[in-house]
Length: 163
Image (cartoon, rainbow, N blue to C red; front, side, top):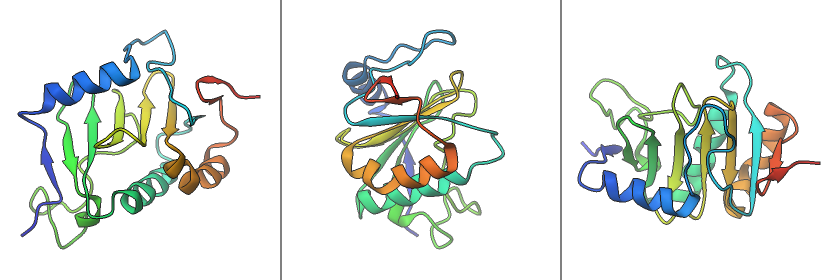
């Protein structure tokens, strides 16, 4: 059986070091945002944790952009993964008996990051600000209208307050 994802192990530190350097990651429960939000990017406020309809929108778009390739799913200070979105589903149970993604883009107490291997697109979920930053022109083209409808008007564009 083909595995839909693998835990980052040998390259865990290297991936986080690249992420820190590229996005100037500054974890904080009070100072927002925690990254330098790239251009282009749009950041929305997240609503009720039980209303995760946006998760399907994000996962579908990331799957479309990744094609047969992998993305990185980073959960700050927790297990992180390299995921092949095209393989996620009932035919590829990983872990055994549990089909689906290893994590959500919804920040459930820690930062949740979905990221192209080359960092050209991704999402950054901030647990304390309760926001989701989506970046990269290709990803925004696929999700912006749906996320605007589901989450309301953005709070930031390209790292600046939205008008």
